[in-house]
Image (tube, rainbow, N blue to C red; front, side, top):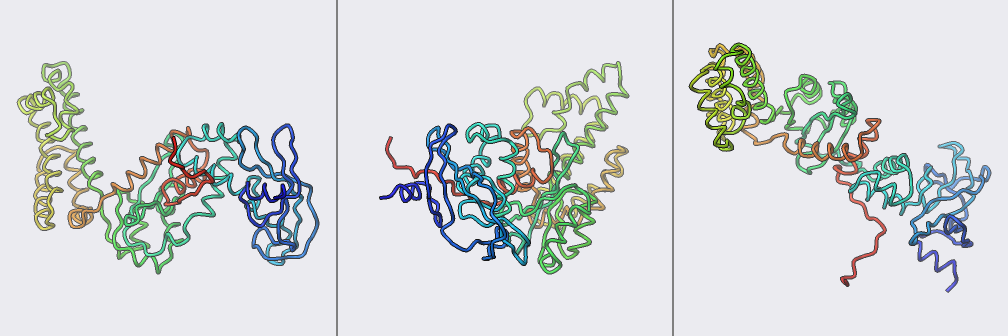
Length: 411
């Protein structure tokens, strides 16, 4: 078997001719060329006439032990009527990439599972190269039909760069994957998703889960008015917990330097926890609050009553409970709960939609937690585009097939 055939099989690249193999100080350099004679446009892939020939360049391939492989070739430029003058297409690498397809597949696979520093050390490339590879792989592998047949979606925002920048994330509840990421968290940001979705596909949406963000509500109402807005239970209960904490702080300030203030110390978690999660000491604190501060204990009961209303599975019973709760909160003489009663009344339809459907933003929050882990292990992202590419790579349903040996079953 000829040496060219051996290396072509070893490298696993089809439609390529191995011309020579050279051992150099920085590894193995393999002179190659495409098997086809007529050059093809690197952008559209069509056969086009030769414009000129560039200087020889190299493409980084996988390593054999400590010796990296590099492909060397002097690519031709073609005169494409559609794309203009472009470098020709080569079978071993993507257009405008200096790495082979197998190398990029492995780099993206590792980026899915470990931090960039480990990837750069393992493969011997820079951070910038890893980011560029991820963006190219995502652009090539992202399912173009991911926005088709969407019916139930979730919308949430995610912060990055020390919470000064945001991206809006849209999740497909049925396929459990991220389908779109856009910069910002305003109504205009979400409007870009609906512009990409188009009116015909937007009309197929039946439910949209979200928090009570005015920006998201306005965007969904404007572009998918038929979709039922479902407000996540977690966000509703968090508003009640925030109101309890606001009442607690006000009571502590009012009772400053008194025995009552001392009794209210260390009551925060006793008031915010679920009753079945209370430790013995926290239960004792809660009983003490009931004895010495009826206003704060009333706030606690309001929080628990709202949670009880969201436990109902029958919409009618839940509605009667929430209507009664709104009246109680308005009469409670607790300003945070009077304000919350108005909020619950305004968004009651979306809250009852949670009871009727059981849908929540739990999937979106879960994927966002995974994204936060990606952000932390990368020590932040400098642009929304880089973060969006990593979100799609790790949470967008992209399956990679790295050029790794199959397990043999031997120890």
